[in-house]
Length: 103
Image (cartoon, rainbow, N blue to C red):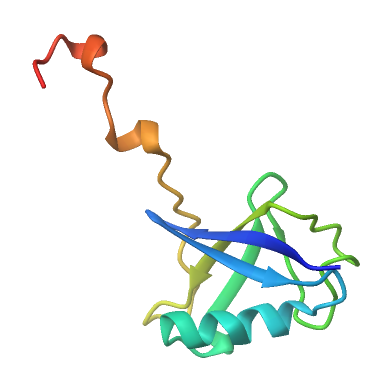
């Protein structure tokens, strides 16, 4: 059965088509084609729990379900991974009524 997950980093969301039996490494390989970053420079994390997803385990093993949000962090120059940074629309969009601005 096909499913998809939303992989988010900063203001960007990647919709990845996958199967519950796909390993995290498979997801990272799909991302490598999209973002031009080798799999060893990628880390996938469940934002709600902070759990780092293990390459050798499947999505089902780690209870990643259809339409799940997964955070992508990349390795920095100092060999550490960046912090999770997911920008929500409310973080950069203000409603017209909220600040009285004329649009």
